Every structure is written in C-alpha cells, then in structure tokens.
Length: 325
Image (cartoon, rainbow, N blue to C red; front, side, top):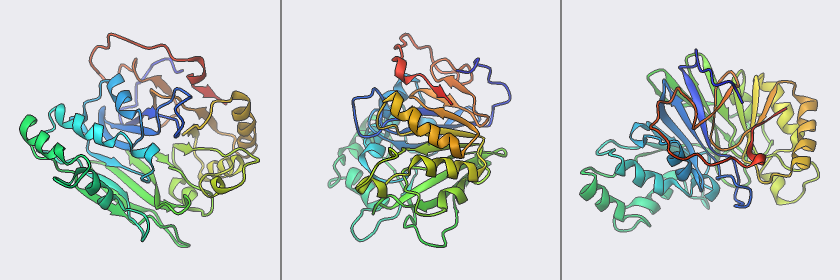
C-alpha cells in the first residue's frame, strides 16, 4: 500500500468497488468503479452485484454523480444498478437526472435504452414503482436518460468522444465480447487518463488504440493459458494482456474482474504477462483508491475524500491484499 500521501493528486482517481466476476465464493464484489474528479464522486463505471454495499462502505454521496457508464449489460456488471438509483434519490437527488451511457443493441441483444426501460418504466418496468417512490418520498421525478454508443466492433473503429464536461472527457470504442455489444472506456482530465478495458477478447486492435498513452490500464479477466471453448471468445489470454499493455505504453497495468483467487495460477499467468510488459502491475482488490501515478490508498482511510466518520472497519482477508508484480 502507499504511505497515504495524496498531494498533487487533485485531478482524478478511482475507487475500486468490485473486482470479482460472477462467482460469489472469493469475497469480492462483482465489477464496478467510481471515478472521482476534483474530490467529487463523478462517474460510476459498471455496477455489479455487491457494488452498492461497497458504496455504503465508503459513504459515497450519490447525489454528486454526473453519469453512469456500462461497458456491457451482463449481470455481473449491472445487477446493483436499481439499488444504486433508489439510494441516490433516498440521499436527496431530487429532480436532477442521472444520465446513463452504454452500448447500443443488436437484433438479438437489448441496447441500453431498452434495458433501462425494462427496469424503470412506470407501470411496465420491473422497478416501475420507483417513479412513485421518488415523487412521494424524495419530492422529485425519476429521470434516467440514456445515451447509446455503437458497440459492434468492426474493422475500422475509432474512439468516439461520448462525454465531455468541465474538463472531463470519456472516449469509448467497441470491443469483442462474444455476441454481446460491449464498450471500453477512457476517462481523461487534466492531462491524465485511466482506461477501463471492460470484458473483451483480443480479436481487434481496439483496446490498444483507445488506451494508447494512458496512465493506468484497468484490465479485465485473464483466461488460463490452456483455456479453450466458449470463453476464448469472451476474454484475452495472459500474453494478449501483456502485449496490449506494452503497446499502449501504460505506466500501470491494474488487473481486475478476478474469477478465482488461486495464487499459484495467478502468479503463473502473471509471469506470462511480465514476459511481454515491464511496467508496474497491480492485482486489485475491492475498496482501494488508485491514482494515475499508480499509487494506491485504502478507500476507507484516504484523507482526500473527506468522508463521514466510519465507526466500523472490517478486516480484509489476506488474499484480498493488493499484490504488486
């Protein structure tokens, strides 16, 4: 861990909410990240199962959120979104909308607009009652406007500037994740950037293109080196990860979306990554803050956030401690 010094880091940093996958046996929440800009929790990227509880662990003010971004709509990236929306209004969001950005759909896959409608449409949505809840108890109007980005990977894709406000920008590019429309994101501000690969298979050069020159590459899910079958259409191999990280020039490779916690297997795969990439490698755990310079702080002890007093702090299991390679 870092020594907790946070000087000269006023631009952007990320609270890592969840670093797991779909399994619930490795003491990790499913995937999710909170990007802070100038000390404010501004952008939520993915909201898998357990991320709402992690937001509670660090006492996040959800009324400050500017937007929510989904890389794709699999359950381990989206399951806690309805709970987070309700909590935002319980905290007093009122009439301020909560913009959502995500992938477009295909003939057989829902896009983000249709997916949000199935959740929140008054009368027909699974959680349609939230409109009445917000009106009666928060004295506001439930408003979750959606912007879709083309998310079908092709041969000549280029990053798209999908969001820009107050010196913060988000660029997106389609990546391959089986037949599911999927995006990778790059958040930039003040001359620094953090790129989130999302889930992807290394069928295109799109991750490298989006992440070129990034400070931190938050990389999802390594397949075992001997993997075969359907998952090879969903995720990259360790040598792909190392090769792409090297090609981007990223100073820090932060590995997340961990499906298992077998140290021997992880270390074997990381040796392969290291054969291709000689920068800083961090295996993330839940509830750390990571900065563009690669330094890390426990989210519950970071003096920069100014969060309310926390009366209880759970002990982190040994295998969740951040590992550096």
